[in-house]
Every structure is written in C-alpha cells, then in structure tokens.
Image (tube, rainbow, N blue to C red; front, side, top):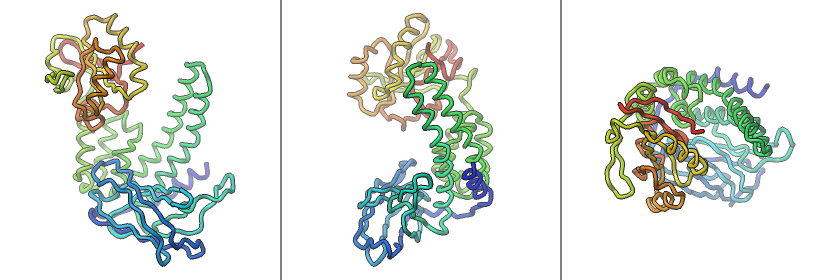
Length: 370
C-alpha cells in the first residue's frame, strides 16, 4: 500500500494552475552523455483520444547530445509514445503545446526483478504540469492494473462460467477502488487540461453511475476547459445522460436501413421496440444473437431494431446475411463509435439492449438477455 499512499501525497499536494495553449510544440530532450546515444533514433507517435490532431509518426536522431521533435496541436496536449529504435522501449506521456525541455538519464531498474528497464524509462519533463499530472494518473492505473490482471488471468484459466463471471466482476470491483483517488486528482486540479482529459476519456465508474455527481465534478473545471471543444463535447454527453432514464421518452433518431431508406424511431410509435446495439466485428455481440433470437421468438409484440456500429457497409450487409440475422430490422449510419447515437443513448460498450414501450417510453436501459 505504500506506493498508493505516496501517490496520494503527491495528488493532494499538487494544485496546478495553467493556461491552455494550443498550436506549435517543440520537445527538446537533453541526453545523459554517459549513455553514448549519439546517432540513436527515437520515434514519436500520438495516441489521440480527441481525434482532433493530425496522425503523427515522427522520428528524430540524437545530435550533439539531444533530440528535437517539432509539430502542432489542436488541443492543449496529446497522449503520446516515445519509442527507442535500439531497444524498442516505450514511454507514454502527455505531450504539451509550447516548448518542453526533457531529459533522458540512465535507465531505471525494475523494483521487483532488479532488471534494467529500457532506454526510455528515465524520460522526464521537469516542471511540466501536464506531464507530471498524467504521470500520477498512469501510476494509479498501473498500481491497480497489476492486481486486476491477476483476476482476469484466473478467469481465463477456469472452465466454470459462473466462477469466470465472479472473477471478472472482482477484477472490475478492484479497479474501481482506484476511482476515488482519480476523482480527487481531478477536483484538486480544476485548472489543468489533464483533469478534463481524464474526465472525458477515462471517466471514473462512480461518475458513470451517478450523473449528478458527474455534472458536479465537471462544473468544478476551469470555465475555459468547460468551454473548449472537448469540454463542450463532454457537456453534451452529460446532458444526454441526464435526459436518458427509465420513464423518459426515448430520443428520436433517423438512420438508413440496408436499402438506403430512412427509418426513424418514431415510425414505431404504438409498437414495443428492443434497440439492439451491435457490430459485425464484435464477438460478444455475435455470441448474443441466439439469445436475441429467442427473445424475439418469445415476445412477438416486440420489434427488434438492430443498430450497427460498423463503419463498412459491405461488412455490415454481408455480416447480417452470414449470421442469419435478416429477421431483424437493421439500421446504421456507418459512423461506428463516432455516431451521434452513441451520445444520444449513452452507448459505451456493446452489445447493449434498450426496451421501449408503445408510447415511446424507455422501460429498461440495459436489458440483459437470458
């Protein structure tokens, strides 16, 4: 537990106040001369959750004891990977707009095995608040991730499905123990872009379960963060979540069927509907189809409307035929996870089933097929 306490000390003592620059960046990394890395190549790759930045696969050679990356960002920061060509080691970090002066010292050692880690293990950007706060978040993830992976490993080794499910549930419950610390990290750093980044792309489970608490934490953020493009996108998600609840009217939408005809949810007013969110690339969705067919057979008063999160029309059409799924009503806008319907119906994982009655009222937001 000592590493966790150490992280918490950092979290509660770290209050960061920054602006939100966007635009050009320069990453200048000075290398410890004892490493003898002159001529070594490093790569920089974005992990852009916002989808707002250009795809980058850049490289830089060490010259005169340093390497330099330059580029531009449409966000205050972007999660990135620094990769060493010689030993393939990676360091994940938050790259910020503006100038960042980094250092690369001698590789660190694994605290458990004593083995030397890769070249990038000692990468650091002293004084960079985005880098430091993201580093704390990553440490929290790693601390709990190691334990949850043990539960998942055990679940994969047992054959009993009930025990598998219990072990998987235990893994998620253990991971959720990290979330109060993450929420505190966000609350203690309302002016830092990383707080918005974590809240939007790594939303703690308690906030997903309690939309009012989610909104309260969002309101703590600096107004400039809330009013940024990413902030407004998150606000739309929160508002959609607040509107979507059992007993409320199901939001109307329109999509194309396989024949290119427009179909609206309101077209089914007066009929019971099961919305089934799925995709041809989703293994659990395909495994779920026999249960869905049984439900349709035993509940003839329901119309099964299958909404695909596929991006490719051929895969979608061919998948419906190959999976013998032609008996359902099929709709898609072929935008995958970028589809507006995912925000409208709070779709964060598939398969997902939602029940709607004849009056268009939601009766079950997460119906489990038996």
